Amino acid sequence: MTSPWLTRFVVQQPFEPFTMIVADGRELHVPHPEQASLGDYATTLIYMHPTGQVEVVAAALIVSIRTIRPADLGAYSE
Image (cartoon, rainbow, N blue to C red; front, side, top):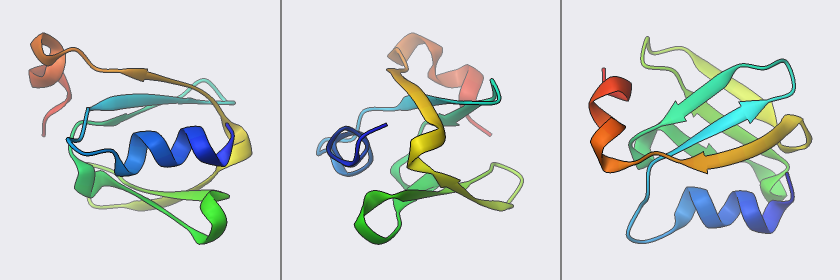
């Protein structure tokens, strides 16, 4: 994923929930802006799992991003 696109989703105001699909097929849901932040030069994304674990994801390994519909937000909240 390119830095401009990643930055757009992470810092947009108002925030719009999204899901990132990474190269290994995992889906990382970001229903709240506190769950993701950008690393240096937006080459990495710091993802806060609902369990409290922190994961650093290389932007190059994010293969797609899709928005989460408001009706689906309950399924991603924890």
